[in-house]
Length: 210
Image (cartoon, rainbow, N blue to C red; front, side, top):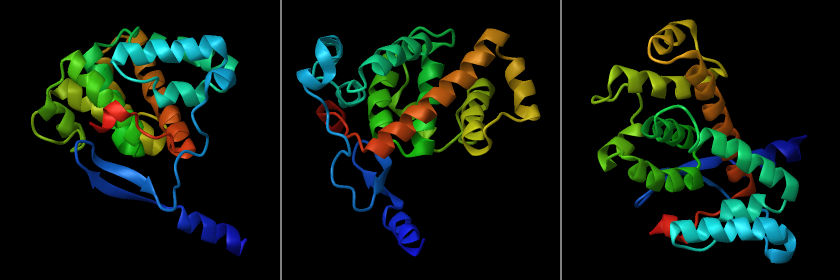
């Protein structure tokens, strides 16, 4: 048991300031990805093709999230359908979807998720100032009451695994039942994804570092 506790201490994450990415989580002793991105043989023709299409869409190489998760061939394709139903196919306004995902990335210390959705957030219409303010949290000056409530929902779900009654009442005044369901599913999905990316130590794509 003593050895096991020592291993946990050695792997404790720490935060660093990285130019262009803000504060990110780094795992002490991490030596590259735990599962390397797959090639065509490991991904299969379908997943390899999907990864290449995603790379062309962003003007770069196939994203590491695709070439890593794609090694689990059937699960990867089912995950893509589910993820696409939340983003970009969800009912919430796209800017607010990106705000929530960025807050999840901050809360979980996911460098990959933050870098990817920093770019997507800009495309959705978020300003650089708004993106930076996400790290300051829902109490930062400048948020509308609605957006502050959305950011608080990401924080409460992260900390408590549920949204409390007071905040739920605020959200019900802003969102219908369909969007309330989507809100919970969206935050939960990106929490799960961040845990996977952090654990597998998926490295940010080259374009995300520029």
